[in-house]
Length: 591
Image 1: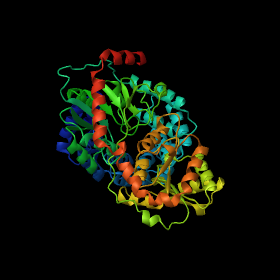
Image 2 (image 1 turned 135 degrees about the vertical axis):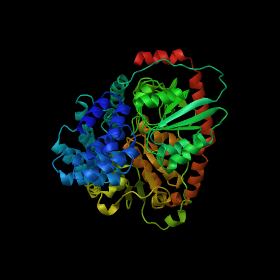
Image 3 (image 1 turned 90 degrees about the vertical axis):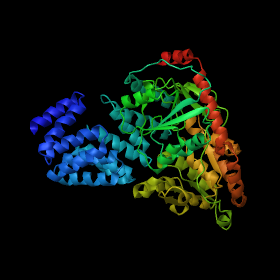
């Protein structure tokens, strides 16, 4: 059996996966219960993305060697790839019990706990993995991700910068680092843009690039074939903003194809039914996905991921489609060569923002966001009528809530007598996160009796009904909310925001302007306090006007799916019809 295993490994390492599999399957025909053969074949199948088949062989291998820690770690990693974090956790815990002095089981456990929303547990496991093996890059990456998830971007970024100094940092680490930069209030827009240019060039350099825009002019009036590249075509906020574009499109003018690089769920099935074509690309390599997009003859590829989880910068850098656009899912430039355009609007990215992007900024003639509103009951103004004191609230994710922002909010609470603050996000389910948040506010002069810290509740109606207790919603800064802002307005709660110098801190500006609430945009922290004090002075009328705010939001561009679909289609066709030499010259200069 040892000879068969070595022959198979040699084939696999030489890129001959089919021959490797054939050797192992032939050997297993004679000894189907051999644990080593089953384990090696399971690992190979899993690495090829054939996880369902791999699971069968992992289980047979474990039946023969239940006390083999590495086998349980490999099986756990495969279960994670399938999205089965709970089952993966059991395998990693079993491996730790068998051999507690190894780093790999703790690294896997940290990943599983992170996906199970146990931030505290993930941090403990990742720290232990790093202690056992300081050179384990995966352990360091997991620790940084867990720290960022609870709002500790400072330590998370420090760890990432150390990892990036090591040879050949992974693409996932680079993208995670670029994403995390937006949560730090100490990073200027120019500094963040510079890092995107620097690391975007590294990612681009790893791809076999083509700067040629091969555009077929066979009938400019034919339906434009548009691909949407994203890991978030599922139960994710991106889906809420994509649905109106797909549902209201003119099928005679555009054909939409989804390339789903993440795991599918029930929401995926709904989106797939709306599309003209669909490719489940989660288990495809970059080369396979690149070939598929080209074979599908996509005219315009719309990237919805940027540097978020599941992104594929190598596919974009290799020029999968003649025209490539980034939109919606990421609050900044990609820095990736061959991404031609970035769709924004004049308020999210005003004149001067072009210097911060490697793509050409294309400003839509309207608000750049259009949301499929959630299914929720009417705002409950009558329930608020007898409420005492002004209640301020923010339901944005923990990474967006930094200590500087908490101190600004504490100043507002001190300036508005009797006011209270309600914060709600997933990370606040952790005792350590609640304690740290409360400590920052108390040091700033706001006692715990004026603060309520809540963990997350299920999406949909249960989550949205919490807005019935909020009078004024506070936007996060420097990283604005998008879905949270829309949800608050939909529930009749006015949102106040502070405008910054780049897209990430100007989304709220565009959304509020679209609803006719531009007077709720502040330029400084002091201005923000003034706006809240003004609104607090008329809290009774705010409560009575909840239904009216819902109607204003519903009548705004943010809910105008047909209008957004038309503007989007027209803009994509205009970009496709632009002379190829314009984009080629620009890309060549930046390559």
